Length: 401
Image 1 (cartoon, rainbow, N blue to C red):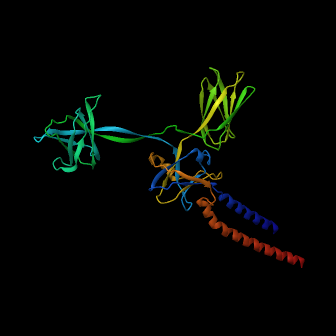
Image 2 (spheres, rainbow, N blue to C red; image 1 turned 180 degrees about the vertical axis):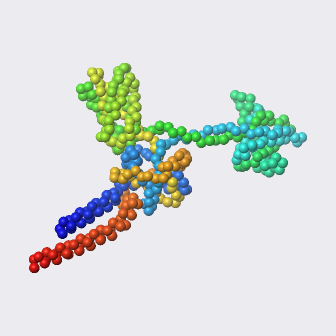
Image 3 (cartoon, helix red, strand yellow; image 1 turned 90 degrees about the vertical axis):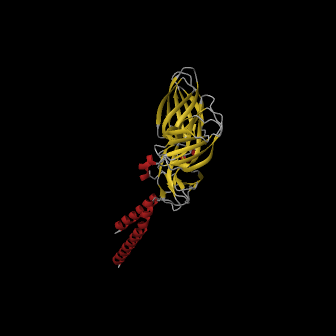
């Protein structure tokens, strides 16, 4: 009987321990800037944020006001630039009327939505006024804009220039431009077209400089020991050292942390860059093997991390925050990770407003479900233990009688 009771007590202890294990806390809470409208947003992984999470970002969560987790992806930050492409329109006719006006009709063969036309004009230092209208069949015309000014503009390096004319967004097949020349000669319009601005993205090996670390150098026998001390556990993907030494040298070095060791060579230069496997140690040791040569002198050390961002879909009007620093949680698995290529690169960025200790209990959804039936089970177990204890007491009493 005593053995049974002991087994039940051990079972209860295991349940309690499991409950505590599942309820491990995220130690850090970082509030986020509110989203102006519903959509995708990015949060830059700054050195301050990276110091609060592992190199794999397994202990990062985004939560709403009810502590529900929101899916996210982490991706390298990209360089976004814009490229202008010129698309030429067909000129159907370019005629002059008896009233001193030019009538230019162009065809939008691709039926693009257009809000400007670029005219290539032979150099002319004059001003003109123009009206523009549109048509779907080339016969019935409808006004788009009036009194558009063609500016006094010309090129000093060529015999032609480009005049951009802006007007309300339109998708007509034909556009007619009436240019008022007054009593003057017409402009020599060579061609018409549209500049299309396309967004281009390029994923670069962008790096963010960490706060400057301290370092010391100790030369012992044939080895120099350079100890690097970071203020916090910033992520490190790149180490730069400035070396002062003879004109020609080649030395093997070893970069050591608590859990890793990597080997490199330095030779006949002043600044060396080492691309290391991601690490987040405060202390990094660099060993320089000098052989029989005089030691080199390290004059400066910097560390850098890859520029990355957290991308997530947020709703306007809700408050969100980051949860960080829990060594026991595993990396989340979100459907969003399968659609990372479908998310545009240039999404609005949100700022981290404040980083504080997290005093609010936070657990995964599985934990809340676990807790829903944990207490009933424990109550049942306690009732069973009580019954066994009562039965044991009666048997002991009988033996004594």
